[in-house]
Length: 480
Image 1 (cartoon, rainbow, N blue to C red):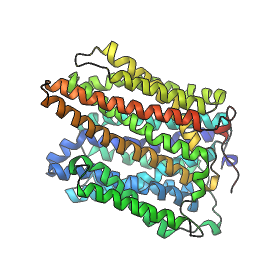
Image 2 (image 1 turned 135 degrees about the vertical axis):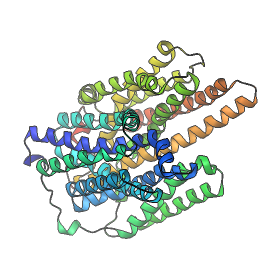
Image 3 (image 1 turned 45 degrees about the vertical axis):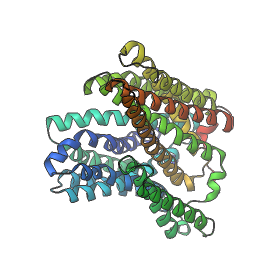
């Protein structure tokens, strides 16, 4: 693919791919702001409203691996365009939805399209940029879009809902989707897939998709159903059984959906394991700190957005320039360890923030550390997850790392939020005032998030191969 494009067209192609990815990332947070308006307009109950979010998460999380593998089998460009069409059409259905059922079904279809786009976009970028320096820079741009898009979604959701209506948080995807599709057709050459590779492991696809969907549902509904409830434990047990059946199937079929040998690559195993822990820590930062700023310090929504701005700016500077130079100079092991250690320190500082905190003393320093740590580490983690993978498995590896981040973040947030709520209830029963009780719970969540980030830093620093500077960015180009 690279040889068919001039350097300038490759960078334009990267910009278009990242715009498509940004549309998917935005959708994961833009809806949250509009939920009250959606509830009032369509008459959702509290329990029914949850499905506006859960329907998307279920299909998105459940289909990431399948979407990535379909890209390997039938062409990454073809699947990216198909996912884009599906996501854009479903966005139109969401924006025009006249009823609850229509909106929920459209959200599920939207999640499927988003999963396909997310799963194959990273492999497209890896195949477009094979030179170490260029690949590191391109991955930095991609990392910034993934890391910073959620914050943009919150602000954009408030802007569109407040000035127009909730319908526009979905309808805004239509012109973006059309433009991205047209530019991708113009810029990306059609890939060629040998006929003998076009075989889908149907049994494996059904098993892994069902297992992931059950696991995602157990996690997202765990707080309301109860973590020790029959429903939650039953769903998790069923997911484990289906996961075991998937592994058993993959070890025996001639053309597995997921070649188990992929996990013998140390970089793949370590990067995805560290990614699960880091996603848990990052979700603790984004969500728990936002709650702390609003419910303990009394910040208005706009003030919360401004409080995150320094971290987002630092993350942008690191992702869009500094991170690539660091990777080329030091490889991936050191930056992962240092970046995640800085993030752990930032969360630890947040865990010491009092009820009557000063922004300059208690909020800004940990925000700066977290922005710096995330900006340094995100690019190397992605490179590590993809570096030793052959082009034939790049879509699967892309889907795998996206699944690791998604599941780690969802599970981490659910567990940390549950433990924080338990600590807050205990503190309230012990006689603390409401703000102090909430803060006690948030401090526990920050400490546990710091522990997750620290373990991820140790894994990256101790278990990844040292390699030479730029080795990870070069990646594998030899089919197995």
